[in-house]
Figure 1 (cartoon, helix red, strand yellow):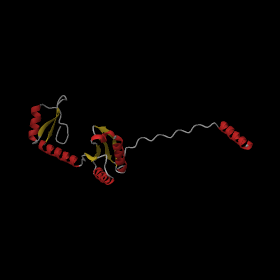
Figure 2: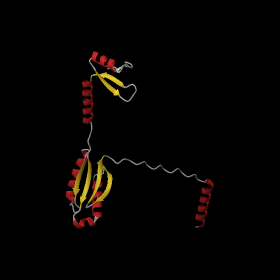
Figure 3: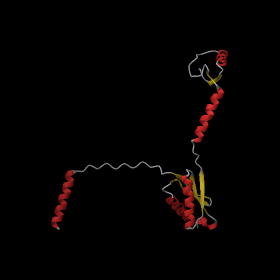
Figure 4: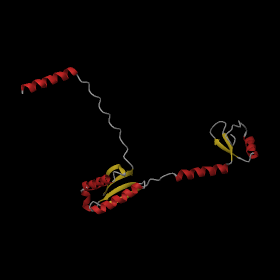
Length: 185
């Protein structure tokens, strides 16, 4: 293949090298496994530079999502809880995932319901900016939950049930019976 993508046809290797040398280009093998192998004439230095430039552009537009951790204790005060929630909100607004961890010491681990309430309270506090990606899990002496920025992916809404066909004659009979009962009373 030529520099602009045009077909030069099948030729022996020495002839392809001479054509590349005459045009001051490099002979680059594109598809080695095909029979015959496909080669291309191009300026390899320029090609590598263009590839590096594209890679830099792609990396510049990428957002790396990190998992950040906010640690709390079962006996945390209201004000401290609010400050930790504010920190978690700031991290979520920055695009990072947040792992809320409740750390236990000693006999505190015998009351996991306290940690579950704290974690659910944090999830409720942050529900406008994030959704729960992983539900509360107990590992060793810690309980954690992972929250991701954005709104929760919506599950498919259940379809409303199709209306049942009504037997008109039975409905009229029921109405007549009700009228008779009202008259008797």
